[in-house]
Image (cartoon, rainbow, N blue to C red; front, side, top):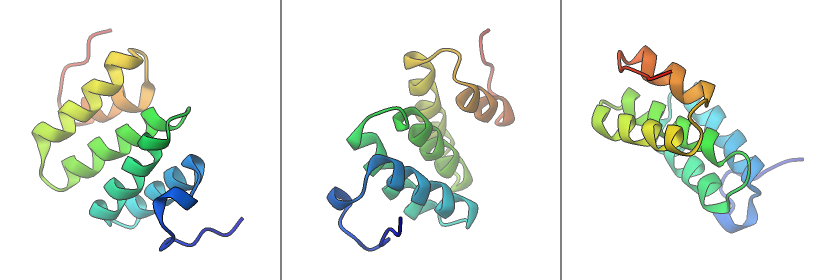
Length: 98
């Protein structure tokens, strides 16, 4: 499936939005990562928490540590065992309760 990165968010599936967010993050395009990840979060579904982790990681990469921690802790409130959120917080030197 080909997804037009310039297509309006409503035309992309949550999975496609998450995939675009992951690609943007890997390329170091953090503002774009956040935009695509927010699209995935808005659409809900299974990828919403993973999208929030990407938002946290992108914010951290942009030097927005407090916002990053807030986004990652929000994931853990919904899923205390979320591996991605736990790893991202640990990598930032934040304590993560078992």
